[in-house]
Picture 1 (cartoon, rainbow, N blue to C red):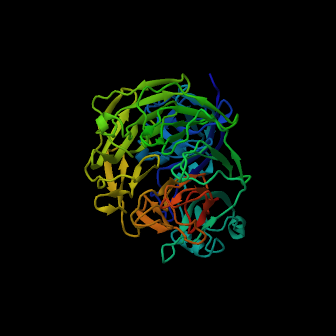
Picture 2: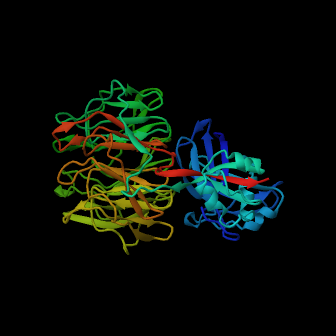
Picture 3: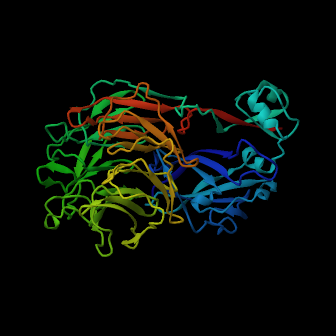
Amino acid sequence: MRRLTLLTVLLCLYLLPRIASGQVPQLITYQGRVAVGGVNFNGTGQLKFALVSGNGSSSWWSNDGSSVSGSEPSASVSVSVSNGLFSVALGDAALGMTPIPPDIFTNPDVRLRIWFSDGVHGSQLLAPDQRLTASGYAMMAANLVPGAAAANLQAGGQSGVPSDGMILSTNPSSANLLAAGYVSIGQFGSLTNGSSNGVGTNESWQAPSPVSPPSIRTDHTAIWTGSKMIVWGGYNGTSYLNTGGIYDPAANTWSPTAVNGSIPGRDYQIALWTGSEMLIWGGYLGGTNYANDGWRYNPTANSWTAMAASGISGRDVPAAVWTGTEMIIWGGYNSGVNGGGAYLFDGARYSPASNVWTHMNTAGTPPARQFPAAIWTGSEMVIWGGYGDQTYLNDGWVYHPGTDTWTPISSNGAPRARFLHSVVWTGSQMIVWGGVNAGGYLNDGGCYTPASDTWTPITTSGAPIGRKFHSAVWTGSEMVIWGGYNAGNLQDGARYDPAGNSWRTTTPTGAPAARENHSAVWTGSQMLVWGGDASGTSYFNDLFQYTLSGGGGVSGTQPLYLYLKQ
């Protein structure tokens, strides 16, 4: 059994800028790092949480309310983990958790107990239990002097010092507060400094210009490993490519991926990161030829290994997700199958551990389609939209790997039919935006919550113009879209905040040249944009970094710091 370790832990109280006694949110933000076998985990992890006594014999709270005497809860919470790092709000109802009763913190010793599953080795207890100190106990210390927070924020933490309780400040080290006997707990949030024109103030584009990038291309794939971006395949206007490159932002260097002559060049293939390998499968080979072969790329060894034969027809643009243990492929397009119908409704699951494919049941599947958008929730694959049989689609379906069955999701409040749209997964919601249908380019969308099977519309107030072939990434708090095509290539972008249902325009200063079919990945602090084409007449291999200060995707803000009276 591989050893799972919790490497670092940070606990902080999630607060709001205006606090009154009895109104403290019953949420604790937990951040940590987890490794499997000494390697930082990447993917969707299943976590369970309980607040227990110092000796672990009593359970005072757990994520599903089922823990007794320190026992493991029954239900888990799906959490996205990147390079080992993850963050979750304990007590968040949106994740199916029970609220945290504040009176827990009247106990002298409260500890957080955590179980983690990587989807392979089962649920394991992470030791030791983490003791909650000042930040957690602040839930019972909500005796902030009325008006003190506002006064202190306006003065940058240099005046308006209350005599007791806690205080919020934009000053990370206030001499006045420290002299008054306060202790700085650290940053826990931010204060928005929104600009009147909706353009973020703490954001920037840079062109780092590393040497020896991969050759120009479009329709390629790109994945983020947790420390590097790998791009591969694509089309350069004359040829389908089987080359690629690895970009290291820390060193600002490119290194080429090994070239295996047995791998045909292609575009519109899928690419997924397992935590140690990049998996590619399918794609378009030119003419009426579609690939049904798959390959595994190990960046450490810089080598390729062939997958077992899939046994399904070749295709491009299928839905594809990585579950933590398997790659799931469904749907797509092949002009020579289904009697020329082209649109596919079958799929398969691939296990790298066993190098075995399992065909998905075709009974009760969604209608055939190409370009279906897909996300993995932590336990299920959700697909939505696409194009099939001369029809734009706005239906969504959930695939359950455990039972090999499909279930339609609610259509009540769903966005209009479309394809070539984008989708991101927030950890609790699937955000669908943009694309095109018979009516033209779309700038609307919706947020789908699987836990409640409900849709919430995305505002079009302040949204960018409709588009297709754009990029979209999730920063942890916002969706960033950029570029694409609408009667011409686009050079603009915007950030969508689902919590506020609001848009903010990305700065145009220093942005890449207008393009479509480029790639974009989120590193944890930056969006990397690479390659693409301008209406199929010119092709790019330049790299741009879009940076948001604050790291969590929030710009135009000042950080807020929490001080507690000793």
